[in-house]
Image (cartoon, rainbow, N blue to C red; front, side, top):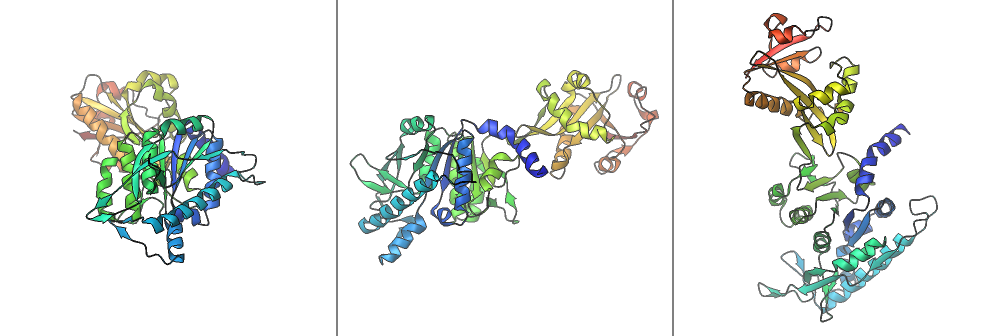
Length: 433
């Protein structure tokens, strides 16, 4: 129960932030067939109930493949794109139509003792995607394989304003009445861009982007994506998702997320926890080091109070923090202050005191302390200081490992020596800049 209460409390800022946001969520055909699909539907319903404006885009590749196999039609591809001739188009229409009806039915369920109970959702689908043919490439005619030409932004926005979930299929229509088979990733990306969506969520088989060391890469800037796409290979599906996420961000979508359709609750974990559970692609800095402002006082108090209670830091009242806020630098992670440090130039000397260096217990293994120390040293140099002094009771070894040498009260500048607390008996270290 305690874990649930803690999670709910920590998720409340995200609940407020996501309300009235427009999210485009893409589910590939493999995800629709997975055993976890029912849980994904419940999560989408929960998002809707929290005030999120939802556009759901679905894929159909395995379902099309099954229908082609049943009819004995050999699938044909060129440059990883399906060639959709007349016979293949019949299978595409059959697969997409069946999936659309199944999705609408699933979203219409009112199941007792489930997130669906009493939801009373409205779902709308239609001719929201105008498409054009890819045509002939390298002498190969793609027939009814197309690409997105335009998204009916006004029509979709009107439905979203009415609290309707909009369902987009991988089919598009031309002004002349032709039907085109589209890539669901292309539909989702264009919809997110044209709707100026707050988020594009792309479901895949992996947790997100996995690095060469086998670890999940939690955050990327769009400009970092090409290196990973090249590493994975252009035919890799995760590379396709990553490229779509970066394309959306470069075109104005604030954040794109890669999550797993295999893991139960992956979407909620990604959207309602600070570190998420997938891979975030975002233009803006997810975590930044900056100078503190008066608005940061409350966050600073939350960070340093536990350390003050343990006797690691000297107690500072809110009034003192407000008065001295200009001395502080902070590391902010998605609205939360996770680390801080202060620099106090010492009157009558060319030394400065490094004080109140603190990192939240949940973020102590990411090099943030070193990042802050380097920042404070640069700040000190800009002020013309030639040495840094630090007083500590618990972390002497950390400073020794970073070039600080033992010192004494006798060596402190007079202005600082007169304020030394002999009861606290802090160890004194100095580093030449």
